[in-house]
Image 1 (cartoon, helix red, strand yellow):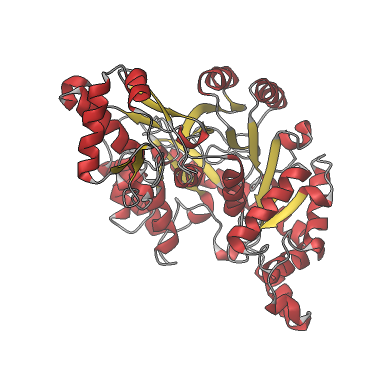
Image 2 (spheres, helix red, strand yellow):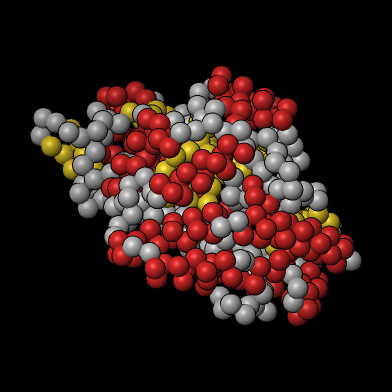
Length: 494
């Protein structure tokens, strides 16, 4: 059955209500568009281009659209007739107007938002970090160098696979993922005071897939999602793939600005809030207990679901408050992976949530991946975690990163670059450039010399971080890279 859509109009914004059609579309004004007929046509074209209206969807009746947009029925008739002549919509006698089967374009994610300078486009920055040669310095990337990872433990676990059951090497993964690894993860959740059962935990192909499954489960095109500003830029990229409307709230050294968050919840009614509690990416900030309590109170008042990404939690010297622990996995969903601490090649993520939600998420994973993550990957990770070497590796890594953060901050200060704060752990420094320097221009100049930087506005929905750069301190030991950075800073001065 075709899905009806209700369109409401004001002079500036067209809204499609209903969860399928919540995208916000700018509508040309009468002066710019020429006539009200052109306004109506432009609004419908925008709905189709944004995929809020898809092939086969029924358009509003002539009278209802005329009333909601404040135009005459004859204006809507003319708009529909002209769109039908273009082939965008078609009429069914006695039934109404429908989007034509050939009207919905392929989803081009770079077109979902206005075009940005490629140096601050999340997709382009990700592709540069992933695709450039291993020898290219990448102080803007989001992972550790190979030499910093537990190579010996990974090789031991990989060799042990030769002696394991053949099914591990040949079969699909079970739908919830390896029971052995899930039991190890339950013990780790307990260390964060998160009480969970095996039915509340599933494994995924990666941390990104965990977020993707949650978005598939809870969102429809046009739903509003709240993120931090700044936030991990692939959250923004993934939400664009789900055609979500993204709003942001400023992040402070102790967590989101709760007053602004409460205001945004009341005004925007977001469906989800996606955040890092521990060692926030990119800022390195840590959620305080007071902010966590206020955040959960606001979430309960506005029926907000929170996705808490804990991928950097193991880099903390001491554990900070976790929303999932305070909430009891009621409206907080905990996700994570080992891509940052063990291997980005042996990928596996997890979701901890309500049991009834896990059931549905497992079904979604079957539909999209036919089973859980690779048994080879989960076997390697389980062996490393169970062998005792992982804790030693993380102890050594935290100590090494403490020294490296301090040394990198000192070198950056000599260039007039200051950290927004000094993180308790992790490998990111969120840094403010000196007055008169533009991070996008600096990143573009550095890329001309084969150095990948991460300019601030790639992390900012509001585009208010033009004088920030995120540095990965583990990738800052190349003398040539520092020479490039000095030259880029000169070229990036306004």
